Image 1: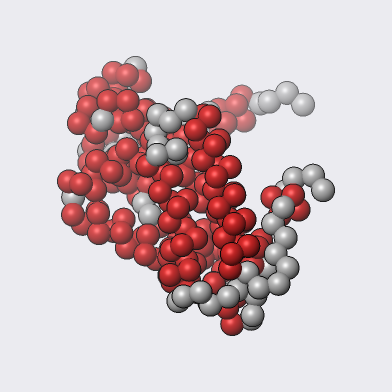
Image 2: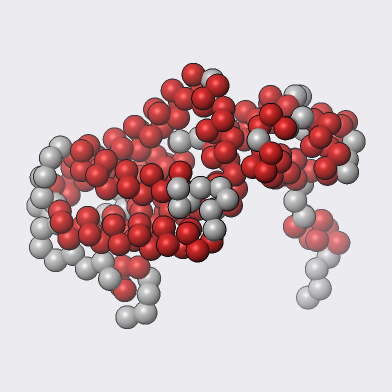
Length: 221
């Protein structure tokens, strides 16, 4: 059945979505300081009144983008997996896979440029970012603690320390192999390294069987 005009219109990005997208492109290519309402609207070919119909100021747009870039997203991933009842190897694989997906999506890489620039300028934002990272570590630590108690994970240190040893190498890639401007080859290599790290971590810490090969990664059996 052919698409109706209303369906086609609904599939198009809204003006607000386009404003966010173009603002990210401008920030990623020229820095936060290059963003102004006038520059943004000129790059989109729209009137400034269209901007103010969606955002009261440039600062309001930046705040919305910063909320999208915030460190709460990783902790939400960890919380979402906490009660899934997965075997240890599958939990570790899913956690790393979802973090890599979050940190390698194009908008996520552009948002990091904004987050890093603003975090160095606004102490409260830097504190919020750090709190979000610690919340993720706590959530992962709580989950790993349950695996320690059920006898499938060796207690090689406190659960929070185990969580840091699992997550930190992957998180570090955000600023190197997953950074905005990194080549697709580097992003792909980083994703492979993250998967290998997850497997090595399970083999180093798990007790008993820990399949994390093709069956865990969704590949062909």
